[in-house]
Structures are given as C-alpha cells and as structure tokens.
Length: 146
Image (cartoon, rainbow, N blue to C red; front, side, top):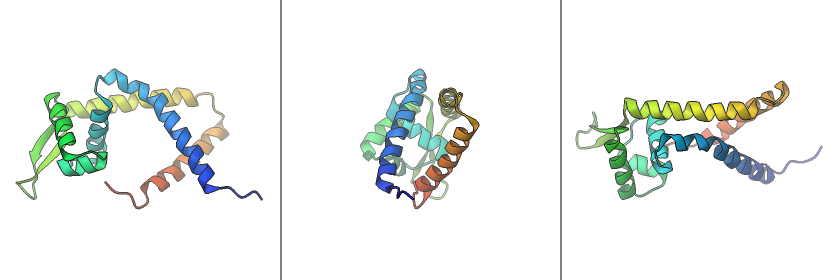
C-alpha cells in the first residue's frame, strides 16, 4: 500500500480550490460590487449580523478599512447598522433584503458555473467529489469560528 503524503494532498487541494473558485468568480463581476465588499457582505449574509470589529476580524482587515467598506455597502443599500439588543452602545451590521438578494443571485450564478463544469463527470466521479466535499467541510469547520 502506497503511503499518501498529507502535505502533497494539501498542496493539490489548495491549487485545485483556488482554480475552481477563480472559475466561479467570473459571476461576481456581474454584481458591479468590488471583491472586498462582496466578501464582507457574504459574511453578513451567510453568518448573520456582526459588529464592525467582528467583521474586520473575519475579513482580516483593520477596523478603519472595514468601517469604509461598511459605509460604502450602507450607501449602496446592501447593509444597515442597528443597535445591539444586548448592549445599546454597540452596533450590529445586518445585510438588507437588497444585499441578501444580491448574494443569493451571486451564489446562484456561481453554482450554475460549477454545475456546467461538472456536467460531463461520470456518476462515480460525482460521488467522489461529493465525498471529498464532505471531508473538505469537516476540515474547514473543525475548531474554526468567526
């Protein structure tokens, strides 16, 4: 039995994931929203409301940078700031219905691109991808919180 090197698997998976996301990312250009704004909006749309500092941490940017992004998103009607129910001094940033619709349309377009890429795969290949997706989700979620 050949021993599989976890490092080699990690390298191949990393390269494959980046290439696959680049293929799907072409759908993002249609939104007319910059990638940093889309990324922050995605966090809010799929993980729920966050404070400015939580959102900056999730996106690995400074608070002033996130403040500018949030101000731009708010001016575009994609997010809204609301007082925190637990602490009225704090503000939570929420995705608006317009922002959610944009993210759902982006997701729909990305998935359509991926479905097209997988259309010619055999049932066995699709099963393998499905099993790999489960393992990737497990690796991505263990000990990881935003």
